[in-house]
Image: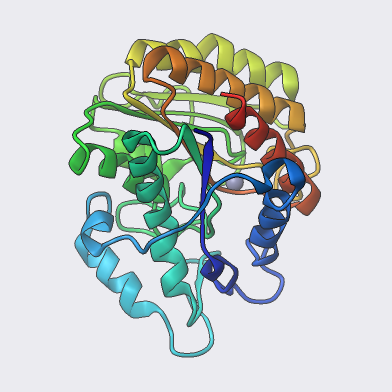
Amino acid sequence: MTTAIFTHPDFLAHDTGPGHPERPERIAVVWEVLDRDEFRGLPRHEAPEAEVEQLRWVHDPAYVDAVLSAVPDNGHVRLDADTVLSPTSRSAILRAAGAVCAAVDAVLDGTAKNAFCAVRPCGHHAEPARAMGFCVFNNVAVGAEHARKRRGLTRVAVVDYDVHHGNGTQAMFWDDADLFFASTHQSPLYPGTGSMRETGVADNIVNAPLPPNAGTVEFRQAMERRILPALEEFQPELILISAGFDAHTRDPLASLNFTGADFEWATRKLVEAANRLCGGRVVSVLEGGYDTLGLAEGCAAHLQALMRA
Ligand SMILES: [Zn+2]
């Protein structure tokens, strides 16, 4: 058993228009990493489309309908200032969420040791009734609910080390003591949420904001002192990772100074926690990462740690 990959050619077709940082090239860079000798043997699966019902577990039904009917026949449609749909987006937005559900199935069925979902668009900013920050549907939250509603799990954790706060996932998990969300992120930075005072209904939300220019030391302290102990206490049955690589020192959208070694370390720590807590069940989902070299370095380090689990 090894790390399974869930992706789909249509993620390249989600066209955000000229000059947009969340561009098709990003997924091509991840596929180039996956084609390297060390990763080429990993089993790859086509991401299925999520069902509308699955999206409605975390999004308002009217929002899901509005998004799907907003996909244009030509040109681009803006759902917010940064979030764009093109005629080819429908398959991508459905498969980005569907990938996580299929990966959860593979890990729970024991056909994969763990899984990485190479998807776009990202999802962690998408709120119950609002597209935000390149995100349309909240892929990782849909996967968490899939594990509970279709697979009988009760307690699911998401750890998010994207450089931006996962406001959407936090909003969806806030009121449910059986859902856990922990995030390291740069503050101040978009979207402006994620203070340490935001703790959810049962201390099930753990935010560890990092100041601009923070790097290895601050990140690892936040993980070791706050996030990993809280995760341990929560006792999840499954750990999902919102794996953004925009905290990499090269990233143009933020100013943290993570390296490939930091992504390897964090992934290893989460895998070790999963081995202790939940039979090693880890499903990772690509979020941000806007510098091609930083994205490639982060993804490769992340995959190496997943494979060594
Ligand atoms: Zn981000």
